[in-house]
Amino acid sequence: MNREPLRSTARSIANTEFHHVVDNVTHIGHKIVKKLEEQGIKALNPPAGFPMEQESTGKAWVISHKPIAVAAGLGQIGIHRNVIHPKFGNFILLGTILTNADMNSESQPIDYNPCLECKLCVAACPVGAIGADGHFNFSACYTHNYREFSGGFTDWVEKITDSKNSKAYRDKVNDAETASMWQSLSFGASYKAAYCLSVCPAGEDVIGEFLEDRKKFLKDVVKPLQDKSEMVYVVPNSDAEDHVKKRFPHKQVRPVSNGLRSKSIQAFLQVLPHMFQRNQAKDLAATYHFTFTGEENAQATVIIKNKTLTVEKGHIGDADFQLIADSQTWIRLMAKEKGILSAVMS
Image 1 (cartoon, rainbow, N blue to C red):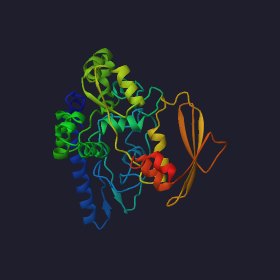
Image 2 (image 1 turned 180 degrees about the horizontal axis):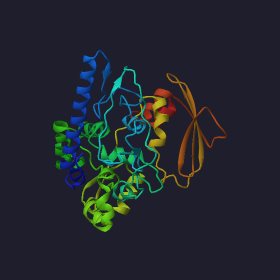
Image 3 (image 1 turned 90 degrees about the vertical axis):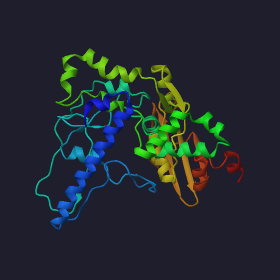
Image 4 (image 1 turned 60 degrees about the vertical axis):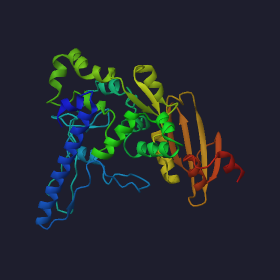
């Protein structure tokens, strides 16, 4: 990818670069598969990003490009969870070819990580999704950066259906947000930030200007994104909301739902660590036993301590809290389709 478009405070410029390179990656994959088919070799190229399998109850993406890229020797994962190529840095997009062809050699990961651990991605992220200690807050990143993708789109549609008239809708969604959603529907979903990519100085082609004058790099690349006045989407009462108010008081906090809803108990338990708000739970130490009955039978233990959440199969240790619930009732509760009082009564 070209670096300067991604660094622009005008995110329309950055998103045009994303979409253009995704199209290139898709086109290259298409040509490779075509050549392989001409030689009688089966192959396919899953999407570089979207579209995804939205009906899936687990991973929506067909294949995980990042760990494959690492295994192929294209780079290593940086503190910001992006692949950093030793030459091009993180200004790359990835594609994968699956084939039944016999390979006579196997790639190996590179033996060092180009990540400088400079923490500029930590400083630039508007929602504090990347912790200085390496922690990643999936919920914070997904809610803001992917606002106009599936989860945020679901929330937007529900805001429309829950509004009794146009004024009630405009009280929830301003004109700029409506126009931005229309642009995503018309031209491709737009990332709200991706500042972690924008400010990363790693890679032979990128690092020069950073090493030459770090203060200038901060002034020219990092500071404009930090100083930008913009709407930042957060889950109410979350770590992200606290971060924006404390670190970027000039940015406008927009409390929203991220639209993520578990469709099964398995998915609910899998997603818990990714939704966990560790700073909100910093003083909490507790063990929870869950027993689910009905369509899905499952037992699980959730342990929260030292700002971490772990999920174990079965009941382990002594519980501070025990919950027994019909699985479908619990899923409906989590989706706010059923009230807790009627669930307890029935």
